[in-house]
Length: 317
Image (cartoon, rainbow, N blue to C red; front, side, top):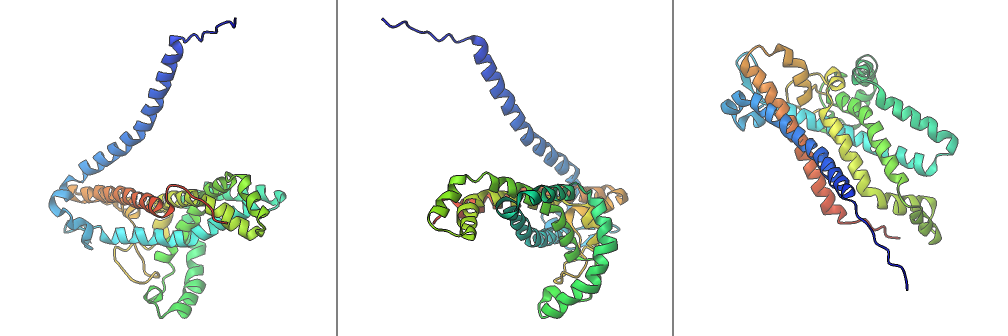
């Protein structure tokens, strides 16, 4: 006769499970509450301009604090364009760097490169802004901008006078700041790809490039897309470095050489100058618009991810 074993359940273990579950739920909900509180405070501070301008605030290009006429369209345009330039530059560099560090770099070179990437991420934005003013902007005005204008001058994007400072300079400085973020996250994602993926591709006769493209990048593309979205979030909210090189002119211009303005930059530049309640309310609404743009862009990115990536990623050999 086999002895019967009984599992005694202690009430304390159930209490610990429940406490752990509710504690983690509380921590997760605190993030939502924090975002909601930020949105509430921004909306509360924006009441005057919300009542006076309504939706016209988003589509108007006028920004005249003296006559208390405000519109956010130039700042929305500058934020989106500078972020788009940054991603166009940063995404290929970041993913290529992550692929090299994960798949190709010799062991003796990987750690020094990773160290330099982490050091770049640790550089304060104001330091990058100073470097941009005294090094990058003169170089752009003397070399890169004239070369781009000579080569692509038939396009409206590369026409007009060259200042050095401008939308292109703002996009480049933001790209420098988001490259370490996208690179670090992409490297961790590529490292998490199972070794069986690579071995299966090699067993079918794939070359090293085909293994990287089909077995690694295809498997990890959803994660890489998420890394790009995190970089985009940093690009949308970047303030000091962009403020120092973008020109800070509230206008919408076709040329990338023209000065621009971003949502974060106008708040940083003009908050101390807001001497009237309406002016201060307009800056609060700029912050509200920036929060809304960030949420909207991330929501659209998640929708695109679900639409094009599907429920899972299955590499095709």
